[in-house]
Image (tube, rainbow, N blue to C red; front, side):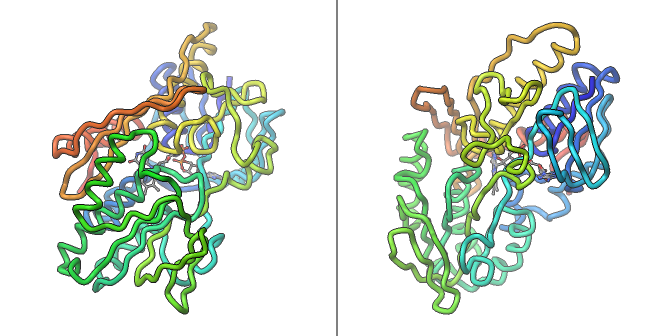
Length: 380
Ligand SMILES: Cc1cc2nc3c(=O)[nH]c(=O)nc-3n(C[C@H](O)[C@H](O)[C@H](O)COP(=O)(O)OP(=O)(O)OC[C@H]3O[C@@H](n4cnc5c(N)ncnc54)[C@H](O)[C@@H]3O)c2cc1C
């Protein structure tokens, strides 16, 4: 029975690794991704703020050697979820079971003026390119701004504002700089009032201007102003944006999306199409778009598939729980443990910020890279 896993990000890697672990050579898993390697979302911040060299955070798929798993580097050009047939630039693949884990595509060009007059740090190219820009930045007005919803890793803009503060202190430019954070929510992390309160206190302590309930609709590069959703304007010298997110075009064209994302059963991750699952950012499952949730969903799907291949059934259900690591700057990290249950308000607790949690976050990354690539991490 062939399992086709589309996308080798957080969710796809976890499905493939779990199936290999459960079934070994008896698995027939084909994992397809257009990219040549995986980069953690949080590693983008490490590179842009000069804390890690780019080559140390990219994990080449060529190193992925798992019993029962074949990796194919190719762009997926069409998905037929009824026939479970996938077209790629490397040929056609038929599946008995299909897992769609293609994430969210990013569109900096959908925000007027962003490409010409600002920067984004959500793509690998954008974040890695910012490393030199930040190293050369001599201070001024900095805006970290969200351009649309939904967006991945809702804590990342707050982390970026705090790390920007550290960066400007270290480079000696903080006293003649301003940092503003423009977000579409009333508090930084709505599911965790505790984490939101801690962040708002820290913003105040570090003189970061919190601008809630607004989006950045565009930039006017000529006048160097950001145009906000309430028609107000904010001047900037450096704009760090969170670009527009959309399901990949190939997913939209497949007919699987409703209101932009793939609906799934929130407990089993089954789509409306028989033997087709979807996990992670590409879904509208009801959890935030973050790797830790994609991983939790992938575990449930892998258990269901492994049980079925053994002629068994799985009782595993997705519990909506995840732990997000939140950079507070000053080498401190907080852990937000949050659970999303359909029909109930989300609940979350906060641990830290602390230096111990920073070590925990490294351990989190290390265990994933060991499980997916059988490699040590961090490197170099
Ligand atoms: C700055 C930043 C910080 C973050 N920090 C955290 C964090 O601390 N914790 C956390 O849990 N999450 C974090 N995230 C979010 C996290 O990176 C994503 O939510 C997570 O990667 C989603 O997993 P996924 O498997 O759904 O999709 P992805 O990991 O995005 O994987 C999708 C894969 O599909 C491939 N693909 C797409 N289209 C095609 C196609 N047509 N053909 C072939 N391949 C294709 C892509 O190349 C990609 O490899 C962060 C994100 C950012 C941007």
